[in-house]
Amino acid sequence: MSQTQTARLMDGVGLARRIVEETSGKATELARRVGVTPCLATVLVGEDPASVTYVRMKRARCAKAGIESRLVSLPAATATAELVETLQSLSQDAGVHGILLQHPVGPHIDERAAFEAIAPEKDVDGVTMSSFGAMSFGLPGFASCTPGGIMRLLDEYEVDLAGQHAVVVGRSAILGKPVGMLLLARDATVTYCHSRTTDLAAIVHEADIVVAAVGRPRLIRGEDVKPGAVVIDAGYNPGNVGDVDFDTARTRARLITPVPGGVGPMTIAVLLAQTVDAASIQLGLASR
Image (cartoon, rainbow, N blue to C red):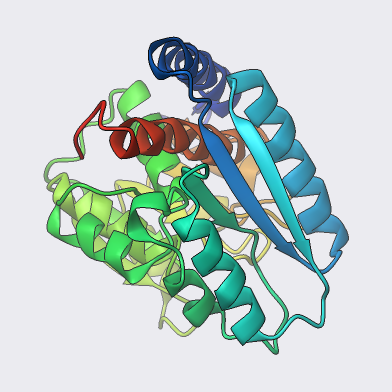
């Protein structure tokens, strides 16, 4: 691709809409067959404006998909033990099929301990160590939603991953690390980078596929993108700015996700799809 050409945009909005429509059909069929509506319980600690907005958006999407949405709001001062007890209670509730802990939680909470209180069969957000292990070993389980959404986008645009060099910039437990495992399982050669990587630009320049997931605005410069590369921007920063300098990167990439409208909608769509799948499994209508 010449530098004067413009990358094709990877439309997460349209694909997410189709996934939600398919999910709605599955939820309707489930209710028809056994009289049960899939239920997603969301636990929100405190009243962080961004988290409140995000939870409201997820609840609206649940309604469109025919999924019951149960919101459990806890005070910001909630201790780790109280949060763990709440999540364990939801894990034991047969009327709840999926559990989402809205993160980040307060700094006084042991987030990992909270995540591990979620039963693996209800971990539709893919945040537990059990889910990460399943992703890493290619076993049945629920993928972390953003990495799962990224893989569906790559499939939608027929990106052949076998033998390709994928550079993941970011190493979080629910995005960077799991997306690398999913790419590796599809025969990509994966390099992990992060904030302390020496000469990040040189490594990015060798990538056939770039996944930016570090949470630093415009960290990936357009001139560092290899001509013809596929660029997945999973970052979201104030002002609708991603981790990639979009305007310059799109003059070199073959495919690129916009921010917003790329990865974000896919995250919620995968969450809803996995909730209905979890309900089907728990009701004995499907196997893992």
